[in-house]
Length: 523
Image: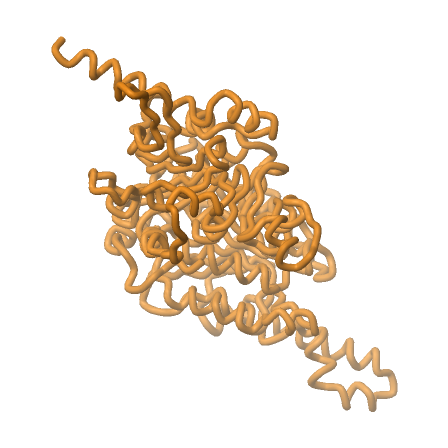
């Protein structure tokens, strides 16, 4: 037992590190309704699986005899662990120590450590990364610690920029994500914010007051409502920290460890040949009537497998991840209950991100189309609808993952063309017998093309109806099938066709493993 005293000292120092900012700091964290970083990790990772890096790093005080009498760890914790048996890289701020500020530590902002002790970051490990964000950003107290100021570096952004094209990155905003932490949510493949305790901003209320003279609270400035409903900076809201952690785990369950691995299959026991009778009647014959697109999602994908992303942003599109016969797939469909399902800027932006995620991680894309077109109007033009649409079409054209589309009701105009995937990569299109399509809607198009004929007719309304009726006969999906070979299907066969396609696509995915030709994911 020659080295037992040193081992005992090691255990004592580990225990001191686990005390974080001390009882008072922990009590303040709990009083704010927040968990500590170690409590969060205990909920996130498998028991006993955390292998912490740099645990002894921090500020120590010694007595005259050289004995340790006090220790304050740095304001972050990082290391490797397992989530449901799969290895991940985890990192998070300890708000009980200087509000989670990185000042005074040698730890990189991506969780690695630049002090030469073999502390690999997520880029070296090629593992999924989970960021548990709760930090107040920089502090002027750093100047006292350093006895000087410093030029902001930003070297850590290279690590973050590289990892998003190699392995999944998830951020949970559980407290303030201020200063250098603010870009982490949009730099992630999925982000979630806890209601009431999470906020995102580069500068908090005191900075806003000093710069603009505006009094504002943290929640109004950067809380869940503004970032999941208005800005789209964060994907999902969570009721509390436990819900946020559960969403992190669920998102990762669809993801491979990295771009060199196949997406994981999780069998649910749901029959791939299952036929949902509701699908035969879900699409109304009257184009003016709406329907619930979630019924289609339930009828097509594995029961209970749909995980929606950004449900409160760009509501005219529903996007997310699901499974088809156990295989992960991306899901994109129109929501006719919001803006008629038309594509606005927010819907285009979140659709673009989903395409990029699926392309990066070789996950097949499934599109269920009921596309009436772009949202028109002055406000849409002010927001730059053309550029948002261009970003989406560029992402689609550059993608190569297997892609299958089902035309359920409508696909019209420019917006309809954006859901066609060109190029040599695996693409399949089917249409329900309820489908209608063309360059523009018959109702509005008739007025535009035959304005003079209608106006000069003895009964303009009757003439308009006569012309529209003629075009409706031409709009039969069977005529398109006769001319082009389009495959029309019974809506109830959609699930069986999809499951067969995704199973067939696995061989194609195996040939595509690895990084794409360029940066496939752009924040």
